[in-house]
Length: 414
Ligand code: NIG
Ligand code: FE
Image 1 (cartoon, rainbow, N blue to C red):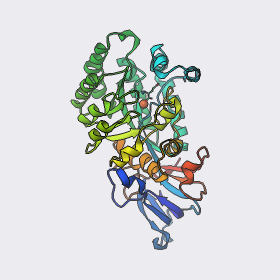
Image 2: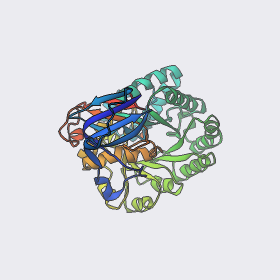
Image 3: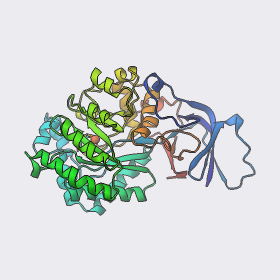
């Protein structure tokens, strides 16, 4: 079906040819066409421009015209870091946190990731799939059109594969673009306590080969941080993944200057994520690399963590992506519009910067920048139409209002 949107108040994040990413001071620039039209055909963006230059479509009977006077169109969010396949919820730990326990203390008591792991073990593939579908429906209604989903609550070969098969089924059945990441190295399971290196051996010798042979993952992740996996272990896992053509996406520097950023860059990881602890050395390592620094404002907000020095990173010339980290422990929300608001409020990013960070740059961070993340001819028509709003700054400003009126994925309204 062919659709033409007319009288678009602002058509946002337009580009002639797909850019790789936007970095440094360019992050403050947002290409916008005022009073625009947009043609979607066969699931793809076919054409766009000024209303005054719109071709005459009156002879085309098959065309659906949608007049969006007063409203704006943006590319759908790309959420490049989530753990949205999980069983149950962890509001009990939330209350523990309110009472003063730290994330690490909760993890040491067998809570945290291990708690979700126990629940996931008991859940069937069908239950996991059903719950994940509900979560995906919710984030789509919030404007997300592409999402990366990690395993990592399985922590055994069988349960990691179970999670990844659920993600595969989601890929096959949901209209959002999905990338799968194998995160066996999320935590050390109880039965390997004190034998962490043996668990890493299991990941390398059993899990990665099976994940690769069933083609269940696009990327491999390691939680490289204080109290979790070391730089050496991360390196071993990244080298094992490389043999199967799998690139890394690393959980790094959330709890300390862990060396996770450097080891990620050294092995050409697609992204390094969290980054609460970033100094000059980490910035130098990232400059000139092909690795997207990704900030997860929801986790830092929810856990009351220190905020990443994003202004310093952008001033140094780095690109930045923002993602939700949607998971039951540290960020039980996949609302990317709220993530934009947190970027503005807590990190002092401008609306232009947060829009770049949640579209084009987060598309790069999940390897889909050639097909998603902007309004560009030939890219997939994943976009959302806002309600009537005065300016695009209003989107992160009105931080709890549902301002997304309709979402189109692959050229179809959902
Ligand atoms: O990205 N940092 C590591 N992993 C998750 C937390 C997962 C959990 O607590 O369940 C995160 O924040
Ligand atoms: Fe995470």
